Image 1 (tube, helix red, strand yellow):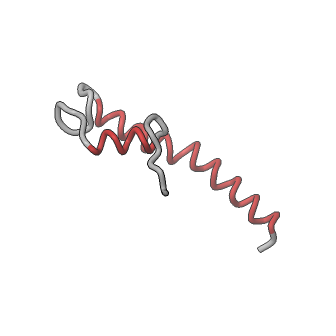
Image 2 (cartoon, helix red, strand yellow):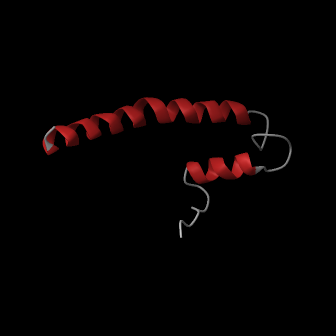
Length: 64
């Protein structure tokens, strides 16, 4: 596969990710948070910390 074809495929995949997959998963988390401040229970958990890190609102762990 040529570099040009690879670049076109990556562009297509990124467009699908931003148009379809990201909104789907963010909508899922939004539904989980309806009526609650946290994903699980009444206090922050590791799930909340992971979500913040995943969506870019929290600190990024150092890899070393």
